[in-house]
Each structure stands twice: as C-alpha cells, then as structure tokens.
Image (cartoon, rainbow, N blue to C red):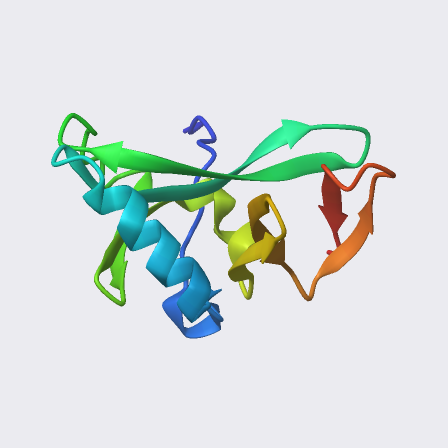
Length: 129
C-alpha cells in the first residue's frame, strides 16, 4: 500500500539548546507587552529575506492569537510567553536575543553561533548545516 508522504518536523527536546534572552531584552519585551492589555507574549521566527536567505522576526502576540499547538510550541521565558513555529526551531536553536541602545538607535539583536554568512547590509543570514 502506498502512503502519501507528509512533511513533518519531529521536535527532540533533548537536542534543543534553547534560546537566551538578555536582561536588557527581557526588560524591553516586558515593556512592549505591558503597553497594551491585549498583548500576552511574543512570536519569534524567521522569514525568507534578502540575499543571504533569512531574517529573524519578533512580533507581539495578543488575545486574538490562535493557540495552534500542532504547528507551534509555546513556553515561558522569565515571565514572557513565547510562540515559535516548529519549522523554525532549527534556525532558532542556540540564539541569543539582546536589546541594544546606541545613542538614539534602539534595536533587538539576534546572535547565532551557527551563523554561516550574512548579506552586506546585515539584514539577512544563512546557517551552517
């Protein structure tokens, strides 16, 4: 009997190095979440972009966000509810998120030890396999 192949991602928690969020980033994320009563956490992921392949995304999630545990994982990191698409886990494994203030510039920075290359403008990246 022929079975149709289905693309799935098997999440093995024992091989997950997790993510790290610095105290500066935690403080800023909590500030953003608490700025609106509808906000309840953040979504962290990747998006195809730029000449190197991908870029990181971080967005607020609110009470209207669908809780889809089939395709996402949800967990708390220091009082922050975090949503990650299961398919993005290999790209987020081991990252560190920081919030940097440099004069008038304020930005979240993503540091990844598996970074292979990035584009000239620093907006996109690719990873070691």
